[in-house]
Length: 325
Ligand code: UT7
View: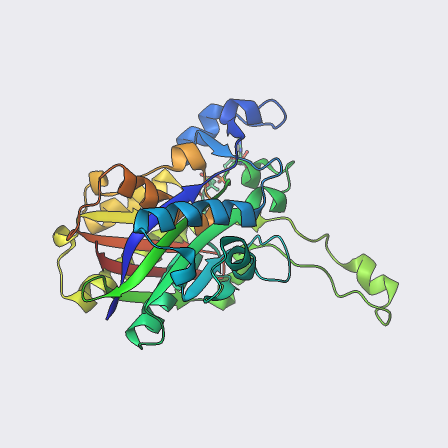
C-alpha cells in the first residue's frame, strides 16, 4: 500500500508584514529583498503559537479529507521551532484534536522536515504498521531571528501546513532523502549552553549567545541549486519517468532565484513550479505543505497527476517524493 494525500490544510498568523514595513527599522529596502529573493511579505506571530497553527492547519486538512480526528493512527510534526522542549508538538496537537488513538511525535530536519515526515509516514504505511497519518510542517521562525541582522530576518516567516494521508493502492510512488552533517555549520541555530551546578562561570561566559539563526547565504544557495536537481533526478530514475511526465514541482520556498536555477538546470518550465514565497517568505518545514494546500484548494492539482515535492535546508538535509495525486 502507498500513502495517498487525501486532505490538506494550512494556517498563518494574523500579522502580515511587507518589505517596506521592515525597512522602517532595518537598513534594507523592498528593492533589495524582492530582487534578490522574490519575497514581498511574510506572516509574523504576535502571539500565535506553533501548536495553535498546527491545530488550525490540521483541522482544515481533516475536514478536506472528510476524516475524524479519532480515526487518526499517527501524527508527525516537523519543526525546528517548537513551543516546548517537551511535551512534543505532535502530542500537543493530538491532545487538542482529541485524536486519542494516534501515536504522536516531532521530528527536526529543518526545511526538509515535511518531506522527511511524509516519507516516514509512507514507510509506516508501506510496512503495514499504520493505515493513516496526519503530517504537519509548522514554524514560528520569527522567534529565532536576530531582528537586527538584515541578512537573515527579512527572509523567514511563520506558518503551518498539514496533510492527511491514507493507505491506498495509488499514492506515493517513491522517495529519496539525504543528509550532510559535515556542512551543518552553514545554517545553524544553537540551543542553550550547558548550564548546571558543576559548570564553571568562565565556560558559560565564553559561550556565544544562543538562539539566533546564522546563515552563510551563498553556500546554502549553491548547495540548493546542486542538490535539488540531483534528488529530482533520483526520483525520476526510481520511478522510471521522464521530467516532462511530472505535472507539478512543489519545492521548498526559500528564494525565487533558486527555483529559477533548478528550472533552468533541469530544463523544466517555471510554470510547473507553483510559488507563494512572495506572500509567505521562507517558512522552513511549513513551506511545502502550505504551498501544497494552496495548489490543492485552487484546483491546480488533479487526481492522477504526478507531483514532485522537494525540500532542502539546515542539517544539511535534502529530500523529495514523487506522488500520484
Ligand atoms: O531554507 C533554506 C535556507 N536558505 C536559503 O536557501 C537561502 C539561500 N541563499 C540566498 O537566498 C541568498 O544567498 C540571500 C538572499 C540570503 C543573499 O543574497 P546574495 O545575493 O547571496 O547576497 P549577499 O549575501 O552576497 O549580500 C550582498 C550584499 C552585502 O553587502 P556588501 O557586502 O556587498 O556591501 C550584504 O550586506 O547585500 C547586503 N545585504 C542586504 N542589503 C539590504 C544583505 N542583506 C541585506 C538586506 N538588505 N536585507
